[in-house]
Amino acid sequence: MRFLWHRISSSPFLKGVLAIGGGTALAQALGVAVTPILTRLYDPTAMALWGLFVSFVSVASVAVTLRYEVAVVAAKKREEAGALVLGALALSLVLSLVGGIVFEILRRNNWLGYGLFPEWASWLAVLALVGTNWGLILRYWATREGLFSLVGKFAIWQALGRALGQLSLALLGGSGLVLGETLGRWWGLAALWRNWVTRGPKLWNPAVLWQYRTYPLVQFPSSLLDTLALMALVPVFTAVYGTQIGGGLALTQRLVNFPLTLIGGAVADVFYSRAAALLRDQPASLPVLFWGTARYLLILAASLGLLVGLALPPLVTWLFGADWGSVERMMQAMALWMSAMLVVSPLSRLIFLSRWSWIKLIYDLISLVVVALPLWYHLEGAYQALQTVSWLKTLQLVLYFGLLTFVLAKLADTKGEK
Image (tube, rainbow, N blue to C red; front, side):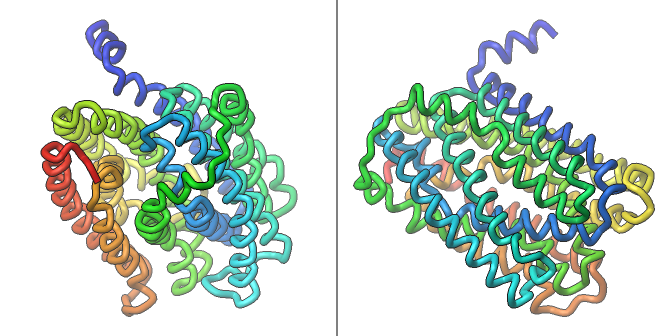
């Protein structure tokens, strides 16, 4: 135990992962803890609505900032990073309104099941987008500054606000889930904002947005497709197989995303920050960071894959109630996909530091085609369709990992200059 503590305390990388991961662990544990209560307060249709709402906000959030928040970490000068923060905060206000209009179009035309939402949901989507993206932008600023504990605390407050909101608003019916979700995305934002106001450089320079135009021009389309492919499952399966399947899949994603967010998100933030720093100062050390991170992730992914695929499914109906029996087969279908994502997703940010980031656009386009498979290729039954998508996505992630090793070698040789 003493050796383990010494190893963590002497490693900035592990300390950063622990700081973010610890906060994220508490946040995710809170979310998982209240889920058995939520499944008894809300039916699968309400859960499907929540899944549709989260899917839209997650995809639209990428468009709202045009990926300028990623540039905050990679910016060479602190003043440039501060100007990027201000520019992205202002941009998100305008584009969040555009996102609300898109949501209303989906709702009025009843595309992908969004016609189930009431009229006021479009304004709720605007609020959720602003809260999400302001938190995301300031979170990346805190990551650049090495304030990993602040990022962890922000995750805890968000989860607390979401849980309290969804539990207390259950009296309003199915709308309580989406209202609580929006509340959670604003909760805890004050700490990040206070840090930015007191410590961030306030340099308003719109020219910096043009200077870092590669992010909206290259990384934005790629990230949009990536998020769309990840979050399209619930809308696609709801449209093809109905709200009962959509609700079960929304709950499955909520459970499967627990380790992905808990471990993958924390490792991704710290890995990206450390990789950017090494690329500026010691590019030859990148392979050590990459392969060391990959080794730990592989061990965790194998263990969690067995847990999600074998140990947890038999407990589903006991934990969540008889209405959620479909989740058992869905978890088994997604276990391999989840394991591959846990290894590859955090490491995939390496490509944003290279001049080959355009390759990610091709990868994400293929990914979207795979996830949307039930829309254009008939498969007998929702479970067979989910299993097929899972296998194809796993194969794609394995091939992408091979591509990342190529990029790694080039970055170490060329010092990562774009």
